[in-house]
Image 1 (tube, one colour):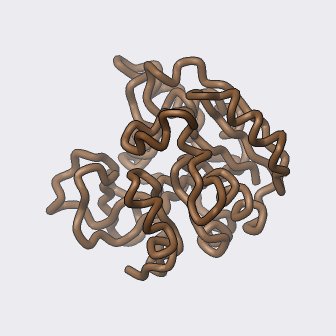
Image 2 (image 1 turned 180 degrees about the horizontal axis):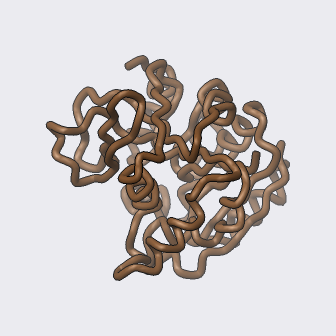
Length: 239
């Protein structure tokens, strides 16, 4: 299975840490976020990675050249990173969605156990990793799940109707419709401003998205400076 990591944005909420480096190279636990991701993906059984970068792209290339990866990495540049949302980076890796894939954000670290479970999932179309909702944060990608199916995904879901939040990890089989729906969403009005989760939302509206629930902790989104400081606790937390 090929993995896709979307890591083109600047990560403005991590300033000043991202003033001089891209978000994926911010160190947590003594290693760059990217290095944690590549190691976990390799241990989970991924065969290769497409890494889509944008902001300070040259630094990402230099890092890969000086920090051997456990997986082959196809580094791609998203020239539209400053004017498009995450769907633009997904578009740069669209060839990956014609086969089995694992798509993840560039600011999230996950244990190899969680990724192993995700990569081994068997679903009719795609699956989204979700965590039961305790109290939603203002920037959470909210999810509504019923009987193992994702019914809706959006940052604007009424918190009273949301049951989970997304980990930002999507897995799909070779026959998934993710690639076709990605093309449809990005071609729509204001499509370049869409999130890659909007593709998931469109498929969820057709009943094509399974939910993979994560309850054991073992993941952390590095979104703010406090997340860097508390990374170890975030990775070990239980929900």
